[in-house]
Length: 299
Ligand SMILES: [Zn+2]
Ligand SMILES: [Zn+2]
Image 1 (cartoon, rainbow, N blue to C red):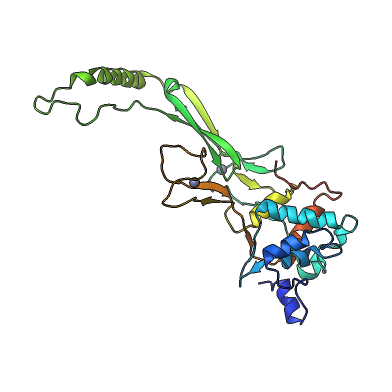
Image 2: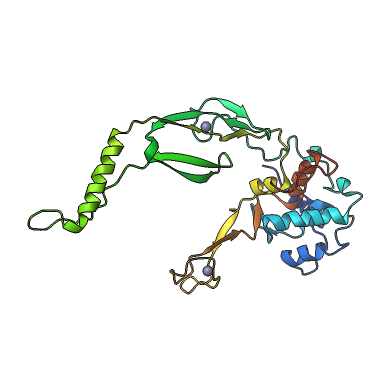
């Protein structure tokens, strides 16, 4: 285990933080982002002075975007010399290996028996496993869903077999005969079922896995790096009032009287390392493509 740099500094009797008087992390972040207050200061020192810390993690009272804004603000406050102000040490002095959080899987994360790879235009190595299925063309339906492992919206096809529309009480209890009001439904169902059974499965549907095996070697945006390092979920569900009416009118159906919750970006980020190490990640991000060419935002 690597001892956090901030801790090493305390052990050596050094003052670990920038002077923050009695400012709590949120206030300290605001103070630092005020023009001039981060001028000439190490990014590591700035990041380490506006975080909460527990034994194993540190937390910022900022969203992912807020943290990105903080880092950009530090760069703007040090326009000429920020490339020399990441950290008071060189990465190599503290680590033999310090890598950005690339995805790297030896086998497909969806199914280790998948085979075949393809490199996409963005430089990612993806699983090219193909599954094929023949379906009845008139009954093919699909649904789209976002797939985390491939980072893509994928379309899934399935066969919509006609289902019995008759309720349990569609028959006369004594005679067992179908009630007249259900006759039409029953006939239509029989007709559809027959069509379904007679139709040939002639439509070939191909599904390619596309799970990301590796994106090592690709230039990662700062946003991606922070999202992958962040221990907290990206979004959270907030309630206006658990047992009361929704106050955010128009965001959900009027039929429901109480608040069903709203999904929003998590307003805190948390990392398993201190602000100094976070500065090393930012340095590695920048160095992927110097001269301000490393992208900040995901597309
Ligand atoms: Zn796969
Ligand atoms: Zn609500």
